[in-house]
Structure formats: structure tokens, C-alpha cells
Length: 425
Image (cartoon, rainbow, N blue to C red; front, side, top):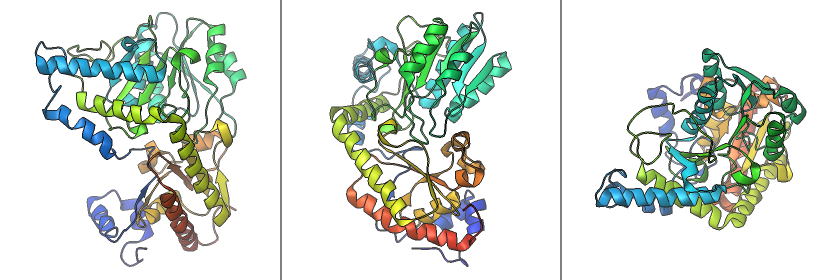
């Protein structure tokens, strides 16, 4: 299924697809799709029926009250939230449920960790250390902190995205109050040596706090915050097919943070306001489904991911596999640069066949900027712009991957045919 050049040009798709009238035209072109495969789980995810059904009663039948109030709906909400905190804390390897704070998402949790730690420790020092491939919300938060006199040191990575531990060691000094390094890079799947990094940081300055965004580790690799030795860790609901708008921040017992927003305090001191009980329930159910059959789930993700990546390399040439291979890569992540095929055009072409992927840097894609992660590992602009990111889940099937492999080479060749022989070789 392809659009005709006189219906909607590549230029119009690339430049104006975010305009309402063009979106309507694009949606009309999808009306004959018979098979859909959603692989854009980096940016959002569907909520499976089994999770949705668990959530529904909490909007209007039970636990819909404010958990701080003394009546049945309030007590039900309080009990529900405490049970959820206990379960997710155990899945993270936390010591107790009081170490967990629910937030509206990964972004809010990361902001709470970085801003909260920095502002409370500003008298001890004003140096923050991160890797150069941290998520956009981390990069933007530390940039914001520069307005308050904090400085940031970015640790470089190698061609597979692994942080340079020697340079991390050199960066830590008496002024360093916080280090934040993601457990798994969300774009290229690199599993960072967090335990080694924590040991290095604590040996140089025991007072330095260590935060990790573990959103892409939660439900994919074994995660135990106590064993890692981190002071703070972020997890996200939609990254494991839970509802959007829900995340959580682990803060080690004894670590204090300054609250970054104000309001009425509910069951948790770091994030004010009435807790979103239905979303917390959905996040908890998604966690249960991810961890109860953890080995089977991750094995399936890995098998389907490998079938997908290997199949693409079998059918096409002029490709670059981004990030490491094997056990040092997240089991769900496939990121491939396809030379001579602009990523945005390819996502549109694939969408018209019912295959949904993302391109370049997911968080900045509407700006058509190359991924800062891919540039950091040495990819040139053309390679970064031609990248596609795909993530498998426990809900995908062999038939889904076979379908993707049946349409993706055709889509790539069509795009390459349009741009001709120009581009990277």
C-alpha cells in the first residue's frame, strides 16, 4: 500500500505532516490496512485489555476517594496505593515501600531527583555529572540547573554507547553532589555498568548522590537498587505497557530531597496532590505481568528482536546496527541506520503499511534534529537521520515480525528509489 505522488508528496509528508489538514489526509490513506504492528514502544504504548480491565473499577466503583480522607473510598484508595507501593518496591529491590514516590511519569521523576538533590545540597557543591547520552529530560533539567549556578560535566561514551569509567573517575571531586546515568540507554539499548560506576563515585566522594533512570531496565533486565548501590532510581509505567502518565522514583531510606512543586500533601511527601489511583493500579498490574514470567518475557522479546534485526540485514545492504550486541544490550531494542533512506520518510512509508516505528531521537523528532545519542557514538548526520528504532514486547508474535520483514525492505527500496543514488555509501 503506497501513496501516489500526486496525492501527497514526500515533501508535504516530511514538512507539513503535523498540520491538521495533512494529518486528515494521512489517516485516510491508512483506511485499507489489514495488519498493524506497533514497534514504537519507546514513545508510548497501547494498554492491553487485561490491564485496562483491572483499572476500570477504580474510576467509579472502588477506591475513587482521596487516600488522605477518613471514609470508605478514601481508606480503599489508601490501601490500594500502599499495596501498589509495596509490590513495585519489591520488583525494584527496594528495602521498603516508603522509599517509593509515584509521579506523573519518567520526566517528573527525573526532575524530582535532579532538582531535589541539587537544591538541597547546594551548600556542599554545585557540580552535576551525567553521561552525554542521557535522556532528553535529564539533559534539559541539568541545563536548567545552570541558571541556578550549577555546572554539568558530561562523560563521553564509546562507539557502542558505554560510558568511559576512567573519565567518570576523573570527573568526581569534592564539588560533585550528583551523578545521573541511565541504566539502559533508551535509544540504542546499551546496558551500562551501573554498579561499577556507583563504586567509582562513592570511592571518590561518598557524599555524592547517584541517580539512575532505570525506565528501560525495569521489566527487561534484573534490577535491584540495593545491589546496585544507587541512591535514586526512576521507572516508568508505559515502558512496560502500563498506562501513560505514571512513573515512580525510588529514593533510598535516609536520602533527603527538596520538593520541587508545592501543594496539599497526600500519602507521599515528595509529590503533592491527590494520587492517581487508577493509573497506579494499571502500573502495578503491568509490573506483575512483566515480572511474574520475567525470564519467558525477556526471552521472547530477545528472540523476536533478533529475528527482526537479522531479517532486515538479510534483505538489505548499507545498514549500520547502532549499539552493542548480545547480553550487553536490552532484549527489546533494535536500532538500525538505513543509509540513503531518510528516517522520517521511512516511518511514514511503513505507517501506510501498518508498521509503526520511530526515527532518530524520539523526543526531538518533530524538530528533525539528529539523535544526540547516535552522534555521541560516532554516527554522522546522514546515518543518524536514517535510523529507525523498534522495540519488541511480550505481546508481539512471530507473525508480527514476519509481516514487518515482508514490508520493510519494499519501503526502504521505494524511499531509496526516490532519493536515487545520492547520500551515504
